[in-house]
Length: 315
Image 1 (cartoon, rainbow, N blue to C red):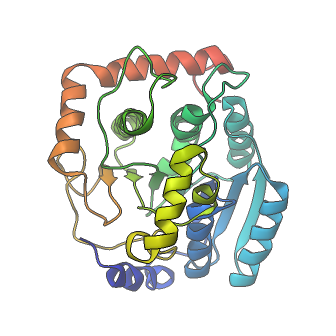
Image 2: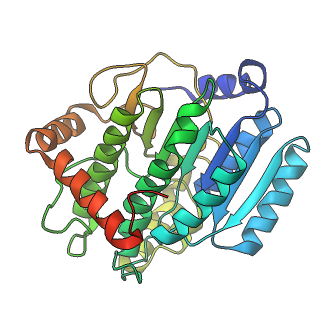
């Protein structure tokens, strides 16, 4: 288990060990874990250039003002976009690529617990936010990440270490519920990151599960499950919930752990709330999927959806 004090100590060295002017894109950071992490990054980094991508102009304006107060030397820009749509992803990536030639950090937390309907691109919104949108951001911005000196990192916050069976007859997870849906999407995201790592071995990819953090998403969790979760948080939150500070570490110079392919020091890492990998169960699930050729099937499916929706593999 990675100690919080170790992460804090590492974060406090960011300004002295990493160069000035780090470029970062935070997607879905207008609330919750994304917002907390963005503010920590802005506070710790030296003269960062940050793009905050989200739907709410009001929330974006508020967070930009708060970040500028935290670090007047930083440059914080809000880009309004509906990232549940691949066309929306392409539009905001086009703007970023016009302004920047390098990118150090791509941090993605976009998602929804209530989005059970299809977008006008014929994708289930919740699955689009957790998988398709994130893969599209990576594909579009990967050249900038590869161009970056030093730090080159992609972080996707969802359910790292909880990978399970992928249902090839229902990739958008229309019929799946609860744990089955979470394991399905988690495995899709990790395999997708592995595919990106093959294309860009100099970039590190992290799929993270931050634990139960009391955010607005918990307060608005729908249905009976939401009522139960809120009751548990109310009664036992001080024992079960991960704090905002612990749920939003920015950097860690720690002993390397094994990635999803077994190596350390690069590639893809699927991490739980304690900073450790998913263990034997997750590793076996991913291995079984690779042996069954699911990684190749998922690649073909994703590229076909990108082509169908946007008419091109990338912008």
